[in-house]
Length: 106
Length: 122
Image (cartoon, rainbow over all chains, first blue to last red; front, side, top):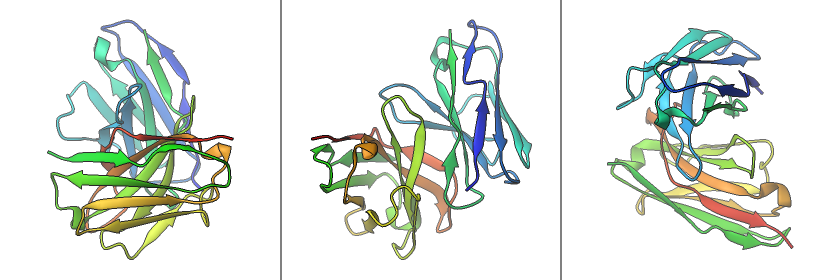
């Protein structure tokens, strides 16, 4: 099973700042990585797929990078609506796995 | 637009069974794989199961293998999760999600439902 380790667990930032979230895979997953945003009581929302491609309707403030085992999600100019939990997820191997999440808080 | 709506959640005793359903609309259901993902209280997301677009292939997380069965009825645009021998560790909100790949998989999970709560308790 591929283990995804996200860091930090919590990121405390102010509106207008930039958030940099990390996801490390235990094995090479090429670029088969997605990022999701999840707010309490809501459905998770796909942000990025295949490491760097924004999903439909996702603003350019969200960007993803990386390949192999190290990946980054960057959120520029944080707005109030961006404070949430973010998960990475790999589709390179079964079973699919998620990282433990990074909470971006004010 | 894509809409996924889960149903069938509730409270069940340990050792019991429950069947979740997820009804889909807004896309060609028979052409896409479907997933179930869960979130236990205070925990992160955990992938549970996948069924291919034609229903002929399924994959499961080790934690549910042999107890849960994913299936689909393309005529009803519905995916199911039959959960047997439930334990307190299965308590979670269960989300269904659409796979992003057309007749291939797995891809990213591009649309999700709001979730259905399952509580296993005596």
